[in-house]
Amino acid sequence: MSTSKTSESSAESPAMAGMDPAEIADGSASQGRGPIIRSFLLWQGTWLALVVGAGQGHPGLAALLGIAGVGIALLARRAPARELQVLGFAALLGVLVDGLLHRLGWVGFPAAARSGVLLDAVVLPNWMALLWVNLAAHCAPGTAFGWLDGRLRLAAIIGATSGPLAYLGGAKLGAVSIPPIGESPWPLPALAIVWGIAFPGLLVLRSRLMTSERRAA
Image: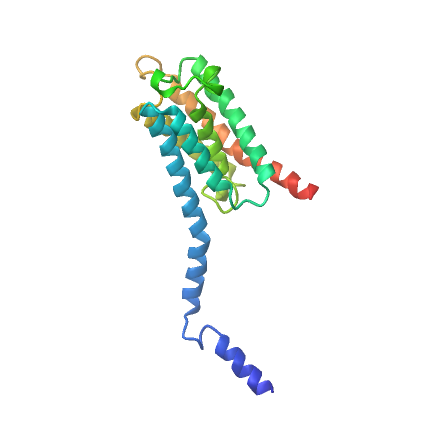
């Protein structure tokens, strides 16, 4: 009996099956990276749908596509109610931050990029708030930016560098306007400071909300 069991276990081992353990490890790593890559592509695709749609004069369609993209990101989440709370806080933060930047004249929105309904009628375009929601939707573990949880200094650096670049990209696509440096030197440094704080802040906010959810459960 023992000989039979030994042979069975040997037959089931990777080496006896003709499989290299290193290949198995690589396959597991690839499967682990797969959701992160898909999340990044979905985040980037949703960002482009929001910004390009607004830049082409279709802010309403852009907002609908943004909502669809965020909805797809939430399909596999285990605590959708708490996730929605995270996204709500992200939207509120976006309204406050970009609303202030808009009031200061550092970020503008062409008339074609505004729909005049909901948030757009009061503070800033709906699609702009959805950019913040889209980012927060991909900060969960196993998603595009979840690996930055606990690496707040790195998140701050990434936010401070990529934040202004995102606004410049939006300006080139016609979705926003930023005063030239010769006219006002403050917008880009302000965006770097804002996103150097806001990006790690979103990670901390999500982590604390989800931790309280697990404790309550």
